[in-house]
Length: 135
Image 1 (cartoon, rainbow, N blue to C red):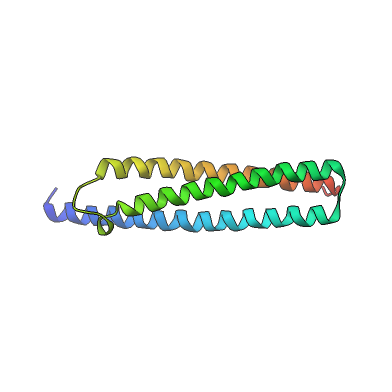
Image 2 (cartoon, rainbow, N blue to C red; image 1 turned 60 degrees about the vertical axis):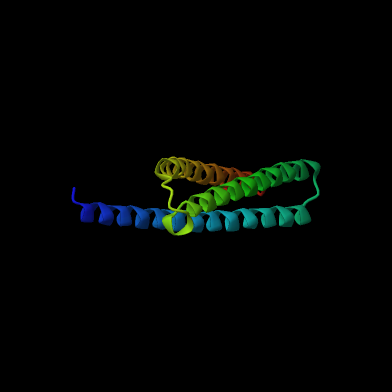
């Protein structure tokens, strides 16, 4: 491969990484909005019902949603760390392997967080549907 091709490939790889970082940020913003919406739904549910079983379940879901907030915060921190390793944000040292490891890990963690949250959201919606006898 010619040096010019290597430079273009390096630029292309960086562009792809920036695109992925942007996508992860957008995804986390969406998931956070959904999580906030579900927490608001719990508050509204508690206004409608003070039955002991409902309160207990609502508290358990609220705790799980708060854990999702923590998970999203950790992912945002991981994204910020990776952004810090981008060439325009670092000193000349080459953190190639560190960056590659973080990208692979972040892809996996983001996918896991999204799947976990979607399952939790579905579980909560199923609980509410059953509570209100909605099929």
